[in-house]
Amino acid sequence: MGLVPHIPRDEIISKFHDHVSSGKVDFYKEIDMIFIFGKREGIYLWDVNDEKRLINCHCNGGMYNMGHRNPRVIKALSESLKELDIGNEHVLSEQKAILASRLAELSPGDINYANFNTGGAEAVDLAIKLARGYTKKHKVVSIDGGYHGLTGFSIAMANEKWRAPFGPHVPGFSQVPFGDVEEIEKVADGETAAVVIETIPATLGIPIPDDDYYQQVRELCDKTGMLMIIDEVQTGLGRTGKFWGIEHFDVVPDMIITAKGLSGGIYPMSAT
Image (cartoon, rainbow, N blue to C red; front, side, top):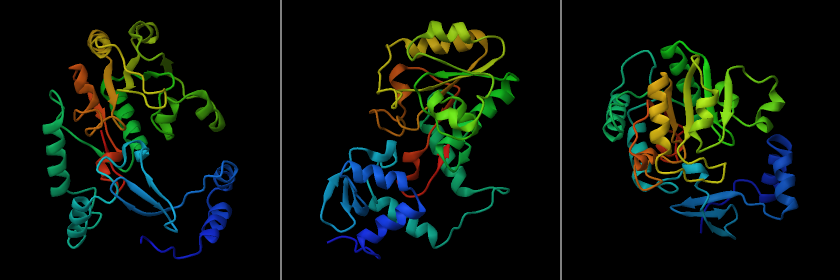
């Protein structure tokens, strides 16, 4: 039962070690936990030699909201590939129009536009660019211990351990403790373009904010002219019981960032 490896298991490990990441292989060997993705279906994962089956509770940060290889997603993709290819960014797209319209219907307040990207960190970068371009300001406030990716502007909002290997910190970015609006108010000034927050920061330990936290952030943004950007890469698309996590707090942000689950676990995609 399951997928037969094209090359022997030991050879997979050797090639991964020599050509992808020796550190990852060494780490998993050290803790005796080498698992190679083989067959995957629904909530289950099989090791490449079918000797072990796991329930995937990790979900890759929300990538597999609909399970592995969801048959409806596979069918839609297979049918689409008979007619479509990657398209052209310079012309109109029926598929983008339909998806953007549906996202607008499912989004709170007057959020009506979607810009599509290839990954979550790129969507974060775009959100920062939009905020800076719209407000004509350059500073950005984010949460200490949060995570938004490792590309240009997204890594500027990362903790020091993530930023340090890549040179000097980008100026204009500051971090504050999660759940403390007063700390945002302390660092924000007339040059602050936006506040960026994960609705429930996963890498911070999945803390749940006070019921009025986001309402206070919204009020502060309205008072100062900052934009409120909510990162729903891990909490969006139904993972908290509502389509967007921020809906639990009855607040409408200026921008929502989504990714991972938007792909159906098949193709990388994100939106701002």
